[in-house]
Image (cartoon, rainbow, N blue to C red; front, side, top):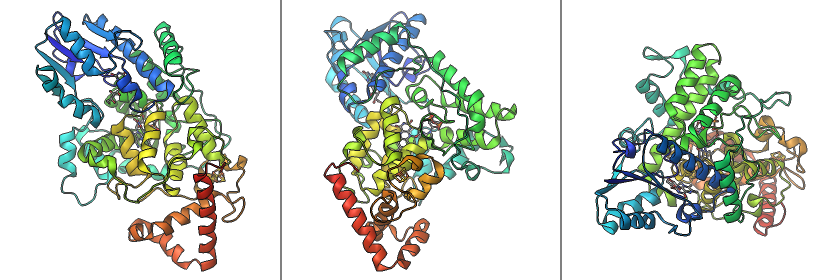
Length: 511
Ligand code: FAD
Ligand code: DLZ
Ligand code: SF4
């Protein structure tokens, strides 16, 4: 009799640890535990989503005839840890071994490697094969390369999995249609309403639980409309393919006030807990293109995110951990200012994205990258604080995907392992890609002095501060040449404005 432990982001019937399950003998353990709810203080909606999805998944295992031991969070006997729950079960029953699929986070993997010694029976850790590139294959691809680039990895993945291929060539003749995916903001866009799932009794019970136990955690719990089972997640995917995918490419980078969902798919949380399978999402988009329901730039753009970026960041995480967690190439040292926790800010772009994040436990990619991320980079926020924030607030956040995006993509803290240059930008970018500047207390056209957009001077201050480490980056040649042409008075103004702003930020003043 084996004990099979299923974690909160392992909600897939084809999970490796369940593959040879003996329905008559084996037990499956799932538990809602303090160890996982509090290692960072997750957003209330994230906890509700995971608990409800876990409870629905346990039901579907029972429907398959499997025996599930499910520990609810408020059970008085709940020990609060995986090992405590395993030991409690071992007192009542005797198991020949424990079987588990590798977790998504390094900290838990380290812990699980010690279980065997602690409980005295074999613990088999199976690889997580719900990804399209194994950790071993990624390591082989990455080892020995001078430079990693997502684009090269992505092309190999397209070939290997035969996605949007015409023989040996990419369909349409180009691998990447990103250049066509940067249409600027347009107020007249009619964004479809997002798909909503109404909470059933299981979800309502979980919402009461989270209300009682986690009201001190960040974020709004209500309204709650996330899907919580496979059928619901498939409905979100279908809704995306029919209503949003056709416009996904053109408007991928656009941000509009009051439109948190835009033309994105909103499936990351379902993919990351296992309710959706990456290949089924890719094939659905590919089919939409072949059926004439979506243009190539949309289908390719969406597929690149899943087949390219998602697999690439996971590969980097497991290849580089544990040292990746302490990277700080630019020696950033500031603490997060109160605006990250919802305190008022005069910067409308940040105010919009952070309030939507706290409301929905969601923000789309460009909001995470070019608003919050760009600010964290330019203001020199310490990677620990920024990683902690991103891991807490987004319903889709697990360290394997969150950390490379934060440490590598937004903070350039890995010195350029993941991305070839920092994604730093001034206010002009925000003004082109959003309508946030229309309602801002700062003026985006003003470069310096009272009322100037802080991104304008912080951008140059960032380049000046990091000149020693960044000026030889070939992709920053142009801005550094422009900086070299600036006169001393201009540089003095940039420094004065930035020092004043950063000092006010450090003093927790409203900025
Ligand atoms: P869409 O825009 O519709 O994209 C489709 C899918 O592609 C997503 O569901 C996701 O699975 C995948 N994808 C897209 N971009 C990335 C990426 N850069 N890395 C990995 N997968 C990607 N994604 C997470 O799943 N969890 C995180 O914790 C997370 N943290 C992020 C932190 C920062 C600083 C940044 C810049 C990005 C982060 N992302 C994270 C990636 C991306 O922002 C989200 O996957 C996306 O916004 C989820 O919304 P969506 O499902 O509507 O995505
Ligand atoms: C994120 C999370 C939360 C909030 N709670 C639980 C839980 O109570 N039980 C559980 O098994 N998993 C939970 N998870 C997901 C785990 O944190 C996740 O499995 C690890 O971070 C590994 O990726
Ligand atoms: Fe953001 Fe600057 Fe635009 Fe204000 S003016 S919304 S701070 S980019």
